[in-house]
Every structure is written in structure tokens, then in C-alpha cells.
Image 1 (cartoon, helix red, strand yellow):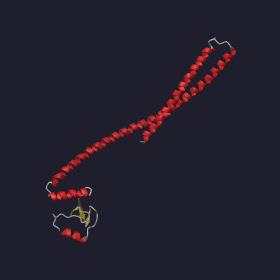
Image 2 (tube, one colour):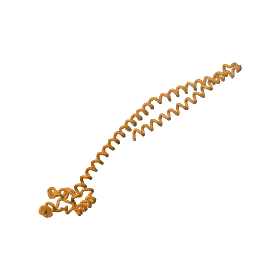
Image 3 (tube, helix red, strand yellow):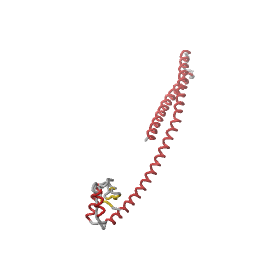
Image 4 (cartoon, helix red, strand yellow):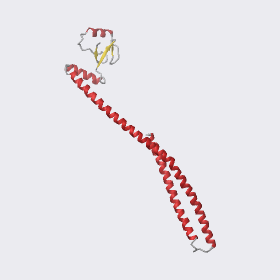
Length: 198
């Protein structure tokens, strides 16, 4: 974004310099045409009155001074182009580099997304295969808890603490859970998640 803003600014300055140079060149061409016209009339021999000839020479001299000033201004305007052009070239090269980097990153993201989608598909297949032998009421409870708790329906019970909500269970509850048969469904009395015992 910063590069685009800088490029737009430099391009605007370049257009302004181009417009200024074009106006100056137009003015210079008009003055050159007037100088040529005055000199043509001055040297044509058609005018013989000395005062009129002197006035034309004064006009020609003034026009030549104006021509010289305009030529200097045109050169100055042309001199403004070089650094602005270099600046624009730098910003355009940076934009090209950023566009290429963006394309490379988008390709990497797309490649990563394909890998993630494939992995998710594999995991979904494994999950379906593993859940196929479970009782429907357990599957229903698991899915409901998963929806309630941001995708985490079961948590390990470690040291009397549920690792789903990270709260310690009362000692009496821990004792009761220890006496339950290994295949009994046990839930956390704080968050309701299914507890996986060591």
C-alpha cells in the first residue's frame, strides 16, 4: 500500500513536470515563430523607416531574451524528469517484486490449503470409522458436547483436574470416579465434558 501511494505521488509529480515542460515548449515555439516573423520582416527590405526598423530590432531583442529564458526553463523542466523517472522506475520495480512475492505466497497458501483439506478428509474418514462402533446415545452426547464447548467434547482427567475446563474436581468426585468400572461414562461435574481417565 505504501509503495502504491509513493508510486502514485511520483507519477503525479512526473505528469506535472511533463505538463509544465509541454506548456513551456508550446510557449517557446510561439516565441520562436514570432522571432522568425520579425526577422523576416526586418530583413525583407520592405520597411525603410529607421524608427520602425529600430522598434522591430527592439522587439526582436526582447523576443530573443524571452526565447532564451524559455529555453532555460525547458531544460530545467527536462532536468526534473530524470530523478522523477528514476523514482517511478524504483517504485514500479518494487511493485513488480511485491506482485511476484504475492503470487508466490498465494500459490504457497493454495498448496497448503490443498494439504490441509486432504488431511482433514483423512481425519474425517478415520473419525467416522472409529465412531462406527459406538452406541448412538454416546455419539449423540459427544456431538452435543462438542458443539457446546468449541469442538472439545472430551478431556483427560489428570491429577483430579479436568483438562477441558482446567478446574479441580472435588475429592469426593475424584474418589467416586476411581471406583467406576473402566468402561463407565464419566463426565466433569463443572463443564460436563466426557472425562478420559489414565
